[in-house]
Length: 469
Image (cartoon, rainbow, N blue to C red):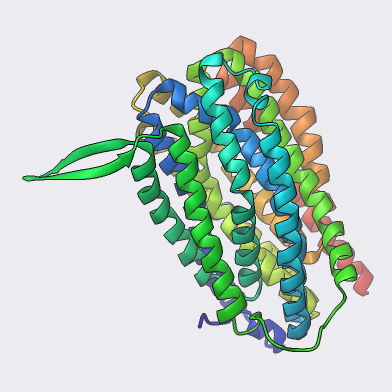
């Protein structure tokens, strides 16, 4: 059984700054690996499909922003329940936490099924609406439709993993997400390519394949997510010490849980819709620039994920830490943990930004054999590298606010900066500078947004101190 690194909060113990940082690190490292595994799956898909040519890469790149939009909105409701799990465990009300788990999983599954049907319904018209060339619209439709039907498995993995993390178990979700990456490689290798002979040293080995191309990439990812959703549910509902299913009297009120989950989730859903909608709008801005720009943009977004996903891992740890701290009534620790997690996130992503700047050509080289795509992708990644510290500030501060139970601040900041800075500037620069102009607009928006997040967090904790006095 995974060790509970948050028990000191519930037991009223006092930790030094060094001990807090060690605790944050122990929680963050598994969460970072879990987040990186998600990006690794996209990297795997992009790298394998990249071998099929520009059109195959562009067909996935065309709808990738929409998959982020749909996935973000669908997962938002799950966050509303996972935060409640953290609050109840922090307050020592484990029976109520288990009730939230049961109610939350059923609710997010039903919601995901509804979104999946809606997304599949628009799959035929989406690529053309995004401005895709007829040569890539057919495969883009198939990819998005399969992705849509895999949404319930993806959301259950996200919800169950988040609940385990908020109970203090970061290791199990991380291991399962790594397993998902391995399965994705195996399934994709079999489904994307035809049967082929691979030579290694003096040995020749025949690898079977279905030769499904883009369709195989979508199916491979969907199957990997389904297997891991079942694993995540098993460890949550059967093996978790605090959250496994038990024959006990009903605790808590589903109506209150759902109401609070909706209050937390609506701002998150709006934030994801704003971010995802901005990505969709960016796709429409990029699409007229041609197939090379579409592919380079998509590959660069995937490559950048390796740099910013550590921030999301630390944000997951921040939500668990802050959520249990709030539930336990540890106000002083809540503030200190908030600033420490944000500082750690900025430090880590400053380092990954430096690495991204140095190794941008190699990162793109893995994804595409096309020299033109690699050159353009490396150039825009190096623009984005300078935004990583402030991007981290926004990511981790949002995790702190989720733990506190305040989710409207992130929405307001992302709404204002995305639609008032990034998109207008990208639309202006794209016809004049090309894809580099789009990514320059992104760099400016992320930097300003990160600074505003830091100010908002400082003001929030200052307000809490005044209320305490």
